[in-house]
Image (tube, rainbow, N blue to C red):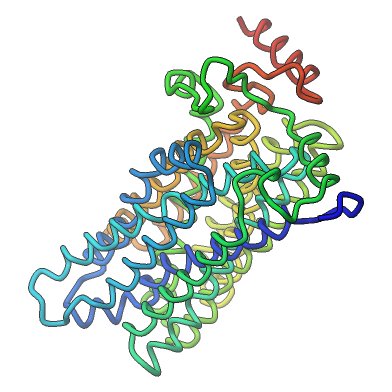
Length: 450
């Protein structure tokens, strides 16, 4: 491509990561919409259905660090493509479970566990892409777009799956989801590259822009692979703080992904079409929150500091989400409650880009491993809520389930107060543009603390 003309390949690839993010959540959330039909056909209770939901999240959580390490080692292009093919196969396998089979519960649990294992690579790989392709001052909005796909996929699930269920049965919806995912994965493999320098469409000016905005270059003189030792990761206060906060985030988010549709239908008394409509509100709010939060985060970071732009915004947003959720769970009107709870989901996702921007900032080329470990915390939280929320609701009511999530939001907000986004896991290369200033700031703070 002509070097005199600035290309925008990085933003095209960010948009396709938005698509893959949406597809991944379409394949996760489809079972929560089809859940009542599956439960009726196979004689499953809500608690047993919760085990099926949790199985996907357990597989997803357990393979987060593995997925991140693979992305660091082999690059986001191949790893993400393999993941899309994998989860497409097991999405289709869900529809193949015979209605007459004995112990169908265990088969569904196994399939969903393997689906989760394949999906574990999606966001660590995306974060590895961000670390290699996106300048630091653009990472908030880039992550905002990627995670807006969460809301888009989760929001698309209720009307799409409901349409297939009403016209063709729930099994067809899983076949459709699998085909959509496989097509998206093929396009990603054809269009993406691991490094900007490898892509034939990246202009010299875009490559210069990317290089000038990568403030962290881990010193790899002793390790060419760029893999940060796990001991370094586990000694980081920042890693543990964002992981704890992301546990709270995941616990709260997965109430909406796993149970909100069923909550509206069974507890609030809405019919199938009304439940599908109002179940779209939280995912739509999540998409808007992701985009808005990413833009605000970048603006505040540029105007003041990463501590305010990344950490301050995240703490405020998660605390605000807790307030919305606590209030919305006690509103009498089903429709008003849906709107208020959706506001809580949107406020929660204002913080989404902060998690991934900070993990990329502090880890550099090892961002896949670190973000995978962090994301494991969120998925453990999701697995807990998928099974614990109906158990709490059965004993104390659904209001209590939402209040537990609201309390965890306050814990997640407090954890961000411990994060310093300028403290990196490995020494920066002073030759990197902008590295000296950030390194001195981080070193001075460490000396004061020591």
